[in-house]
Structure formats: structure tokens, C-alpha cells
Image 1 (cartoon, rainbow, N blue to C red):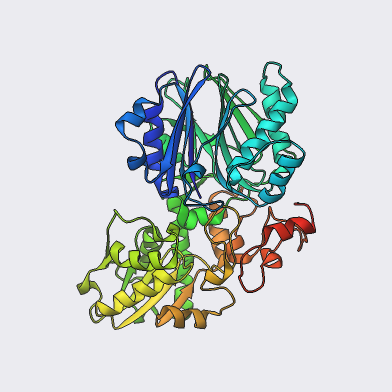
Image 2: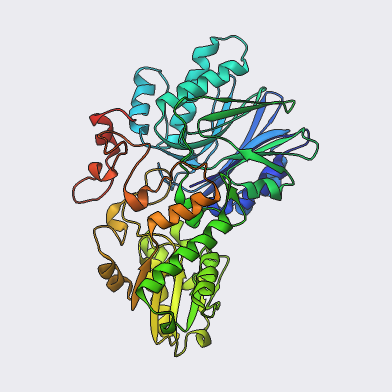
Length: 501
């Protein structure tokens, strides 16, 4: 999960990009970067840290120009500690190319080998984004051979990129002196949309609609799976479908947790989706626990609030805020290391004792991934005086690694992996544990936008739509490639057994 943005304007864009990245900060807190362009010259600043820390006044002054891209990074591939792996990435040939991406390439190892031995391009980091930019650069170079670049060449290069890449990717790229390119993988796993200024002369591309709206741009539409758009320096936009095998399969975890509630992704309001999840979760609660046994419903901030409010309404039980959040501590889900996550829970949340004392409390969380946060919060509720602590998850059990850009790479870290509900409950320490139903969750979100063919829900069902052979009813299970003893996906082993679908 990362946040990306790109803009073509008639005015300086450094402040626009900065403001948009602030609105996308929830998508990545490890590093941030901005590249701007003036004519054919590009200017870059990137570093590890939050947006407000990476960009000071002197840095902003060094980013002139009226077109540019930016990214906030949440590492799922490569070395999280490396300053060099902050995005965007730059290659000088052909034309000068800068690229940032959100997602994860599952065939990055094979591509890196291919780039070195066949394309004669050198990869200097462990980042799959550097692999991606070199694949695009090679395909552009093949089609121009030193001749002037045409939009047809750009779209042809993207078609070739789709044929080579496997995994999830939403991309923004600058071609120096030409304009802004954006495209999305054929499954539309990671989100990408664009909007225009009031006069229609400026265009912004971003991971979420909230970044467009916050910058004063009108949301136009989502970029379709497999589609590429190109905006030249005069603001003229052209688009083309660059694959014949596109299908809208957005990541369902975006609606559960990743996206901001005020965003609309692929025609689905995230806030409305979370309300509907609360309705289906209420049905699960009623089937397990009589509502009369619940004195109060309390959300675990922040993402679970809409689901918790709707659940409380459906159950007819009081809704209360029982935890106060310190907004200056990062999201624990995307913090590296169990010890850091565990310590940050107590720094991040503080219980309001009177909301728990002597009560049977139903806590509602958006999801339970490693179980570290849930176990600490259940204990906090007991310490605050709760008589009984019930826990409901607005998402189904996270049983499988995610290889498409979410930090769930190791099966052994997932509390639900190879465990039943009772075993999970005992580990977390709740009196009752209730999970969302996956089919019901898919159904209610799809009802908001029937154009969604299916969801990428691999962390819940183990089905990998952009994975590698062997196939299982047209889908692929990452469990086939889990290394013994570690539970970590062996992508190289997968590549050796067959080409991607």
C-alpha cells in the first residue's frame, strides 16, 4: 500500500503535490518523494519520513515546474531501511523517465534477471519499482529508436508492460518534456483515479478521490483496469485500453481498512461500504450472541467507526467512544516489527474507564491481522473494568499472506493462519470472538457497484487472481509456494514452476 499522485498544471505544482500527499499520508508513512518538471528538466527530493518532515521550505523551493508526481511509501518489497528505495525512481534513457507506483510485482525476481541478461539494464536496489521503471523504459526505447515520441508509442509500450508484469500496480510516470502517464494493472487491484480543475485545463491523478477533492479538482472517473492515460504539457488528455483481458477486481481490503472513508474507489463509497459491513456483521453477532448480553458497543479507532455505529443501530444497543486516540502515533498495522506494534498500542490508545466499568462490552475492529493490537486492546478493556469483553471484526479472518502490496507477507505472523475461531479467541483473550462473513461482505459492496466482477480477497480466501501456476479453478493459491518452516512466500519457486496467468 502506497499513495501516488501526479499533476499537469499551468501553475507551479510543488504545493499541490505536497497537499495531495498529506491527504494520502495514511497510505504510507515510511518515506515520501516529489519530482517536478519544468520544460525538459526534472527536479527531485525524497527521503524517509512523513511528508511534513521530508519537505521543508528549502526543499519546496528546489522543486519548480508545472508538472510532477509524488509518492508516500509503505514498503512491501525491498529494503524498508534504505533511503535509496524511496520513490519516485529516475532513469535518464529514453527521454528522462520518473515513476512511482503502488502495488507489488510478484515476478520481480524473474524480471530483474531478464532485464540484466536480455534488456541489458542494471537494477541497483531491491525495489520492484526500479524493476518496473526499467521495463517501461526498455519498452519505450524499443518503439522509438531515437525518433520523436508519439502517444501511440507510449500506449504500445504500456501494452508490452502489461504482458511482462504480474501482480498489482497503479503507476504514475513523468516523461521529461512530454507529459504525465498513468496506468493500472489489468485486474484493477490497486486504486487510481483522475480529476480536472474547474476550467478543465489541469489534470490530477491520485490513488484516492479525496486527494483530488482536497486540491480543488473535480473527480472525473477511475482509471479502468488495463487502461493508460497520457496528459501532455498543454493539458490534453488521451486514453487507451492497453489489454484485452481486463476485469475489475479491486482489493477488498481497501474498503475494510486501507482507504480513507471519504474516498470513493471504483464507484464505491468507502464510508457506505463500511456501513454495510456493519449491517452484515450485526447479523453474525445476533447468530452468536444475544444483543441483551451487550451493554455497549465501542469501536477501536479509526477505521471501524462506521461499521460499529451501524452494528449498534441494528442491534439496538448504545454506541459509545471508549478509546481516545493519540493522532501523533502512526497506524500500528503498517509499523515494522511485533515489538514496535505492541508498544505503540498503549501509546496510541487510552481507555475511558467509565465506559467499561462493570459492563459487557462489544469491541468492534476493522480487521484482525497479527492479533497483537487486538490482544492489547482486550486487556486494556479488562483493566478499565469491563465485566466481559466481546470482540467483533468487520472483516473475515485474515488467514493467508497478501502478495499484492499489503504488509502480510508471512503466514506464521497471521493469528488466524491454521487456527479455528476458538483458538484465535483464546490467544486474543476475548470472551467471545465474532468475524464477518466473506460472501456477505462481497455481496453488500458489490451491490453498491454491480460493475465489480469480483474482489481481490486473497488474504481471506487464499485465491490469487494475478498469481502464478499451478491453477486452481482459474485462480492460484499462494499456499502452494509457502516455504517450509518459515511460512514466507517463495516467489522465485513459483516463477520456476510456470509463467503467470
